[in-house]
Image 1 (cartoon, rainbow, N blue to C red):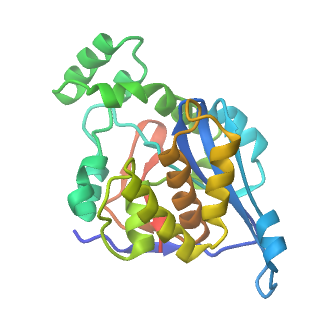
Image 2: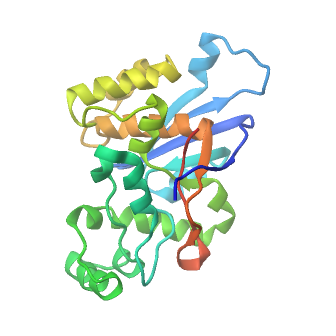
Length: 255
């Protein structure tokens, strides 16, 4: 099935946020969209953009409660006894960047207390072990899952996205370089600048204001791509899926 736009969400005035996991917790960058017809000067545009680091999702959602839309690079909607189909659809879209999409663990594995236990539980649910890469983000997946179970009204505000897909859509083509390389950083900054000229300067400011042990370079770039996507967003029309507690499994990205 070829993905297509299921629906487009209109941009209402307010804060639109991109979020990426980082060593310190979560890195968020946002832009405050102005009402239609209001022409903002450069100074106003700069004031409308901001960023912050949060220790957990509860803190992020509390501090950014006024958000219109939040796109996050984290699986939302966990299956119990069969793998999600979303990831195979994303790999088809991403082409040579398909390796950036990894299998999402079974919900039982996400809530395991050790890697060994997570592997056993994932084998029991899905028939295969868990990669260390997947295990390393299980605590963050769990945070998002718990938050949306506790606050179901936020399921249409906090949405799953994928930075590599966002960059591909922002560029209108597949990217050439890996995001952790110098060439990849340069390539991504050029793409971001085409959509918002203030972002390369903001990127430099964030590098100066944060430690790489807390926020990596690609965390910043990924969050910026998701923020731009949040401003101009659509949900891809994959076959409907739902995870535990009927949480929708879907991906939203740049139009």
